[in-house]
Length: 300
Image (cartoon, rainbow, N blue to C red; front, side, top):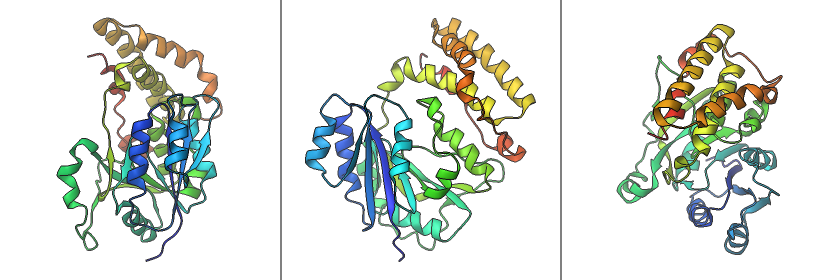
């Protein structure tokens, strides 16, 4: 089998236990040509020292402050591989994921991203017995004529040069909706994003960060920017009006000002997306389903 270099990129911030467990899983991958890049967002819990001591082979890049998803872009720009595997600090691929991912890419030049089957880490013992099944003669892609797919940042593979051409992640977002914005641009370049059930990663689904102000704030603010950057004028106006209504409605329902704050900051911070608007082709915005209402579910 052809074994091109693969760059595995993740970021971390004050989650020492999780990143160490993820790195342990990464180094159990059955593939012999990959590099691991970790960008640390100025952790203060001993993360950096632990990675340096326990995984000296990792290319560790240290930030001077928490710069959010921009840290991924630092990792992407330092990647040397033909392909990049994108992970969270609490996720890792199974042993065979990288090899299977490469097989998908090498057999379809228009496949831009491989969306992994991101499974719950806490059910790992229940699903790991299926990892060794021979899927070589089985079409494991999930395809539909009715919708397009984005990807989950806890497990995805992408052609490095394509990601660079797409402009990497939208740094202005800081957190959330970055995968969807990137998916819009990759699809608009006429590449496919496909999900494969035999390319698996494990993710620690946790409500820890979801219970704070961060998730509802960034999901709400960035939803406006996602709309304004990618949708045609009429649809952008309609979606903006719907989002504004929902911000007021759910603020009253859930007795919080976070949605209204995020909405005003989206408008007042619109200069951050100046020059970045690129309306996608009609079939993309019509078929890439974005659950904008997810922003309003965190305080329910």
